[in-house]
Image 1 (cartoon, helix red, strand yellow):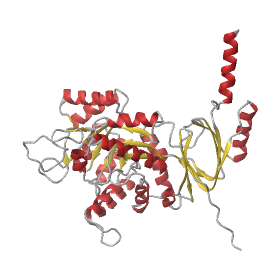
Image 2: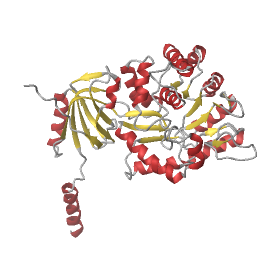
Image 3: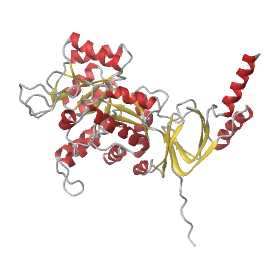
Length: 438
């Protein structure tokens, strides 16, 4: 009897101390569901999931049914003047890097303590989340070993605020191809990723990175290696196929840094799921990507930032050849029907400024609505995030509200008013109504 009374008391304790899942009724002007805009829709969130979405009458009826079953009334969040969207998915991030005009890549790898880089990364994670990016695909720690594993755990455990992380840990490079440059060949310098070549070493490296926590295996299919200034292919096609096969056996995809024409070709034929950068793509290469179902993450903002670091005065001086060429290849990819993933290579430029890539995608020829799809449902599909990227019933409650109409003015994605990840509110700014004129 005492045990029964104690159990009943515990149930009352739970009910009285807010252990029931929270309910939120979100009322924006419109909802972008990952595919299309729906005027006047509402969204009901319970705990970590979206449980109703659609016309306000239907959503409110769903809320009332929950109340009749004993659940509390939902907290109403008025998002007047706003568009509610799925949480944005950053497709190419480096949380352990900061802008190269602050500290060069070489000096970050060689001179900054990993403890310092981790502290920076915690701030970068918060800035990313507050900018509406509730998920990031973080593609390499750039010399910070497996520290992204701990960062991801700290976020998941609620120790620090940050986005969901899909991590690549150290990434894979061919021997001699990716390291700080300009040193005597007699000196072994720390690497920006893990070197591996040939059958056994490649299998071991892939398995080691997966065992340490990698969600995705990243390779550098080309790079500016040796004394040559141009990017050249690194791994052989058979080596890439071996990496892909090994990763796939554990359920992980392989993606490739690939900027040269031949590097892209090898990565495509080797079975990589996405190519990062694609600067030297050609109509033939993009046609091959389309036919093989390989997506492109163009990282427009990174090249734009680096060009400015090197002295280009954007908006004042003519565009450098690198930028002109990127416009051409991006249009070729669009014309070929290649799936475009949103991802800016953020870390080369400031974390929290991820929207810079969205704005450039529109400037380079994509429609704003297609850019929104790229940053939500398209990325979710390509990255195998089956419960993200859409505002649908039973999907994870990762949601962002922006003031305005980003499907018409992509820059409105910067006007963040509300951020929810996994049903938890991280940002909720009051919506200020315009003053009436007298």
